[in-house]
Length: 304
Image 1 (cartoon, rainbow, N blue to C red):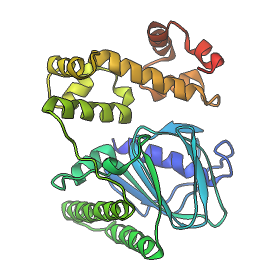
Image 2 (image 1 turned 90 degrees about the horizontal axis):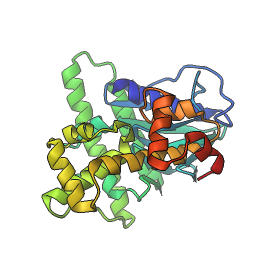
Image 3 (image 1 turned 90 degrees about the vertical axis):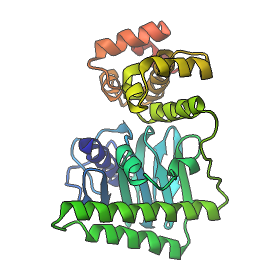
Image 4 (image 1 turned 45 degrees about the vertical axis):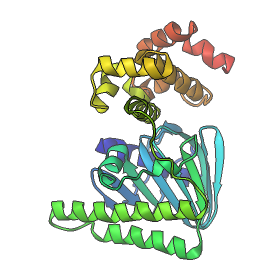
């Protein structure tokens, strides 16, 4: 899980070059990092950075100075000074550019870390995000100052001796920060959509959100364990709510994600199969042919 945070954080850092295809290697500097969160305001070129990736962590980027742009799920986002973007797990990120004077405050929070930190708050940032799980806002100067203050406050606790106390402090600061973000959304007219419906409907909604964030899970057992229910009950919920089996829903999401990734011809079929959690390209090819009747190579050429 820790590797996932820093792996994807490194990918984001490759945006320092004019294009993701033209990167040089340097080391990314973290102002703070632990098993759940990483912070940086220094975006550098990195070695072996991929051209595209699917985010596994929550990425919150505030533009303190300069400007940047990135393509997320085939939509381009241009950010200027004072803009902040919230990107939840499960997004396809590629093609980034930044200005010479670009200076961000970036918070990378793992899905597990987000869940842990928000326990007891009865709140989730995802309730404010748009359908594609990405949302950008323009902040007032005083709001930018608040986020920068939080950033520096967290970074200040990076060298504390007592790990347990440090973790508790960071958790409390982040909980407060999340409520601050919520205030920004509320003041701009966003609605906080609380979970509603029967217990089965709520579980199904949790599954769909989890599936979008972790499409590489692939098995019914994987998602059932994370929902703390039996595979049999999990499957009955899916049939009841959607009319489809859990397995068919999972497979459909994998196919849809693969088709999205096929649009980026800079990624090889092997790289895509790895990104989706397949042990090898042959297994991925067999899966796609079984689900669509067409090989990955032909699917890519047809630009479906």
